[in-house]
Image 1 (cartoon, rainbow, N blue to C red):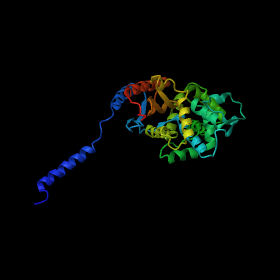
Image 2: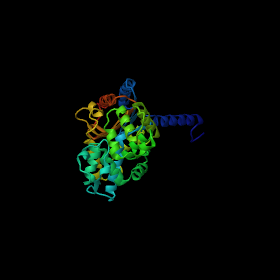
Image 3: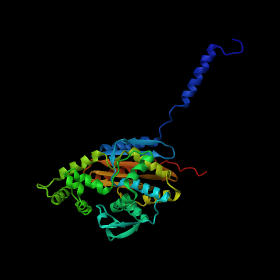
Image 4: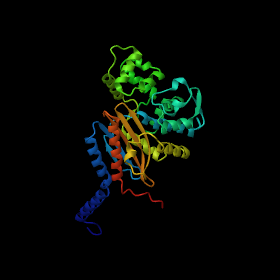
Length: 355
């Protein structure tokens, strides 16, 4: 054919173009850190008398690692991240301010109180102080005061607006009442003071006996029966989500999505100053690392979730929860080991260019 391309040459050209196009869409090599992380995680999980769920993501590159990351896990106090974000959203919207007063009443006592245990009922505290008590000291009374003020339906709606699947999330008082209500419907009507006294019992057996006294139960419930009540509550999925969803939330916080500049800075600062979980991921990190996080602890449940910087300007989202263990110290040892594994995996992480 004069002035054209012969059929043989045309076939060859089509084949060549198809090959080049295919080469352009081939997946890139997996990041080396993932193999290091996987080896450490699987070895630690194999020796752990419980279950681990983990999600890690490099915010700069989008590369991720998941281990049971789609499994719903009970978050306990880690739900305070969502509460903080709704409080800051309302501040950005002008609905409230950092100085908006909230009165601490006698019925606002909770188990797991921190600084508020030293505050006289009837005292008005600003939102700014309650945020610090909730996020830095994990004070449950401060958390429930804020939840009551901003409303839990708005906390849940805000998560949905962010495209996240959580919960449903409920107040920590409601959380406890639902557990005790599994043993007796009257458990769902326990007063805040009674819930606080139950929380002061260190062993599950002692707590079950005290609950029996409160509700006039004879013979007394056993620790095993209360353990089953906790498990039944966890199975409902309240105050729970997967580590993948927690990771997505943390990435949004790392990127300041949905937060004004001042509120984003405040969120990061509060998370960096978290006092709880010193024996968890933080224990395995080098002194140069920056770990902005929130922990959560409940019967046979322990979490540590946050934003990790091992190199300047490079943020890693890390969401880890454990369940099924007998001793919190075992879970903390696992999480500390995870901190060491993360350090090894990302030892060559390069800072972001400032050019």
